[in-house]
Image (cartoon, rainbow, N blue to C red; front, side, top):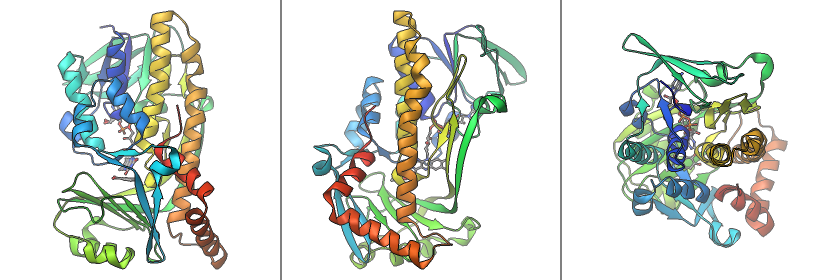
Amino acid sequence: MRTQVVIIGSGPSGLLLGQLLAKAGIEAVILDRVGKDYILGRVRAGVLEQGTVGLMDEARAGKRMHAEGLPHEGFSLAFDGRDHRIDLKDLTGGKGVMVYGQTELTRDLMAQRETIGAMTVYDASNVRLHGYEGRSPYVTYEREGITHRIDCDFIAGCDGFHGASRKSVPEKAIRTFEKVYPFGWLGILADVPPVSHELIYANHPRGFALCSMRSETRSRYYLQCTLDEKIEDWSDDRFWDELRRRLPAHHAEALVTGASFEKSIAPLRSFVAEPMRFGNLFLVGDAAHIVPPTGAKGLNLAASDVHYLYAGLTEYYQDHSTAGIDAYSTRALSRVWKAVRFSWWMTTMMHRFPDTGAFDQKIQEAELDYLTHSRAAATALAENYVGLPY
Ligand code: FAD
Ligand code: DHB
């Protein structure tokens, strides 16, 4: 068969791109190596920038997000036993973020895709990319023992860090940059009311903690942990005890605990692949870059890549101009590196590193002190947190 764009990956970036292209009358087929339920079972990001919210609206998938998502105008940096509020709204001239889970965003985009009858192939194994250096790219995959081929104009590699798209590029054509952090995040979901109505990012001598939420009755909590930590060693009681230790006393006392229904450990890494375009293949989202989750940027960066690629592809099909797709990699990477810098900075400022000496510790304390006493410093944090303009 033939289509205009083959999108590899039915995560947030692939689904968002698919919806926007459909709206512009551009046909796309999405392939994913796993099934719908598996994708919807992955618990990941929770904070959406206004730009991401705007793209969900543009994709006509924003209705439930506006009804059920929680608009946030600030968050707390907790250290020295106290909260220090970052007033996003005041510092950014009225901007904020939307707390709405990646799982729900994905579900909404999938539902919208089903409504318009666009084609998604789940459980597509052995996805391979061919001929994208030339004019006739195509993708092959296997399903139920049969090999299929889809010819197309363009391939969008939206298949995450471990996907086939980036791996198909010859090593000499790609440059990668990587930083691996010496800790991970242990996260849980529990149907208990959040400890505070705003997010709390806590820096504590025992390690970082984050109090987030999915709704007024569902909490998402994270603890910095070592990389060799095992989930089986973390009973719910142990998690709650450790979280209480890392929070200011008034939050620890207010914490409502209960049985968790999801528990996972994620390692932290920064990674960028350059460029993001190889002939008629475009890398999008986690396929091209990974950030540590501290700044809540991973999903939002995937969305800004989609914005640039969607603009380029509509220009190509509607105005017969390659200017937008030619600029894609440069435009996307310019924003990517700023988010990589911000995520690295938030991670460095909020975590305890195993090799931190007395000097580094003092610098971290000075940074937090500066941030919470200088409007200029707090403004720099806030404008990055709500998302830099596209
Ligand atoms: P993905 O969501 O990874 O989607 C890629 C899709 O491609 C998947 O559906 C996958 O099945 C499919 N795929 C992969 N390989 C193939 C193949 N060979 N063939 C076909 N299909 C394939 N960000 C935050 O901001 N906050 C967080 O708390 C946070 N937590 C995270 C926790 C984990 C464990 C991970 C992995 C990421 C987390 N992120 C977080 C990052 C955020 O979830 C990602 O940035 C976001 O999912 C990127 O979307 P994507 O569509 O580019 O990639
Ligand atoms: C969540 C994750 C983050 O990485 C973050 O910075 C804020 C919130 C979350 O999963 O809710």
